[in-house]
Length: 204
Image (cartoon, rainbow, N blue to C red; front, side):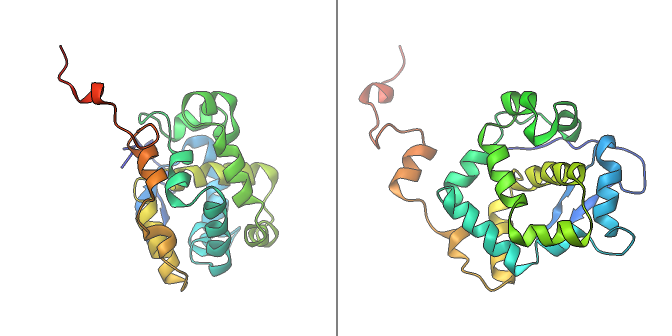
């Protein structure tokens, strides 16, 4: 668990975008500036498709997402790399700071890993088919990347990732394996696995 997010409330027909299946409990509150683009995803450009729903049930997309997560060091390193610096942010903050690629957003909320990781996902062949099918423009793809950041930083992402792998018949140990020694040292902020004796002494 590394964040509880405030979601921005607005009164319109697109109050919630449900991220389908495992992501339904993690509905995203959408900032006003993203509304038109989100409507395009939600309606499938005039149809009834929810692109988020289709994507996270797409075996080829899940395979490529898994490959990217493993390239980033596996699930624990991946979660560490996408973890926000602060907990008090919402869709409005992201929009005002230029989205997942915005300099201010990277400096204050995210980190330098975010544009690289999200761009890897958006440039995957499985995602490109959605770009072609729904005729997504550059601004749509940028906003879609913003939506992905919400998904990847959701506290339940690891559990949801396990469910996604199971749903498409992939190896769930990518999401459920135990931490190795290096990951434990990193997670618990230990230096080379050693605990300083000084740190164990009662404070004066």
